[in-house]
Amino acid sequence: MKPYEDLAKSFNALITYLENSVTTEGFAERTFYGEAYAACCFEQQNKQLLVQKSLQGFAHKHAQHEAARDHHEFHLYALYRLKDKKLVENYLSLNFPRPLKEKPTNWILLRTLAYLHYGTHWQRLLWIIISCLTLMFNQRNGLFLDRRIGRILLGDTREDYQSHQYHAFILVLLSNLYDVTGLSWYANWFSKGIHYLKNQILENGKIVPKGRGQDQLFGYANTLYALAWDYRQHGSKESLHALERVVHYLQGFQKSDGSFPLVLCKHDDKSNWETYNNLFDYLPFTALMMQESINLLQTDKKNKQTTLPLSEELQADMH
Image (cartoon, rainbow, N blue to C red; front, side, top):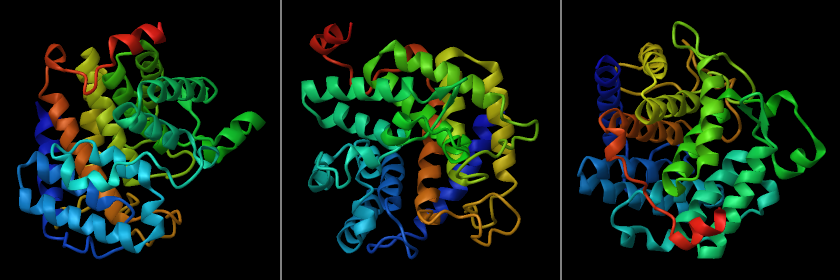
């Protein structure tokens, strides 16, 4: 399978670069969550020394920088993948530093996943409802808007909220939510969103730029996973062909050392970076999405298990 082979080649080059870059104090550049995602990649490869080194780096950055602590939702999204939770038990709380009203759609879905993994029965039920209401009011013809709750109430649909990058991330989170809950609402929203996304992928694999994060690596990483999940879940040959084009497009920007620029262009001078962009957050995140996309391409649908099946009681409450 060519997409699998090409993706594996790119992943191997990128993970080697990350292995050579991580230290016990983290990556040399500013990060908010990159070390946690690197640890997940290394664990899947059974490289425990690198897992420990990455988590030491994560702890160092977490202690030193408030901005890193503010990304708690992103931390949990990575850390719940680790098999040995004792390594990170001090970072698994549901005490979020910022109120919900400050968070856009993708953060709300991240927080929902956190409560599904670590919350009580009633917290899980509440956050399923919150996520579904958020998604209901944020879909426009298949495109998910990445708005805060206040912007939803005001009906604000400015261009910044119509982001293809964050639309792709929301699709990944929808697939995760379906895998965790088995609730068809999430699968139905995913189907509408992936149809929209595939129509934005040009023949050469480039995604039509729109909204925040145009041409950024983060959006392409999420697109890989969304397409792989759609292929695994529905057998969509269209998604497999789109995945092949996106992988080929990405490979055109992969450097000889295995890394990628944050913005996929010939000369990334940081002029198109947002203030919150960090290269060494996006590189490990991309590695994890590549790794999990490869896993999806190797997994038959019938053998796929939900990561956290809902209890019968909660299932009954939702129906």
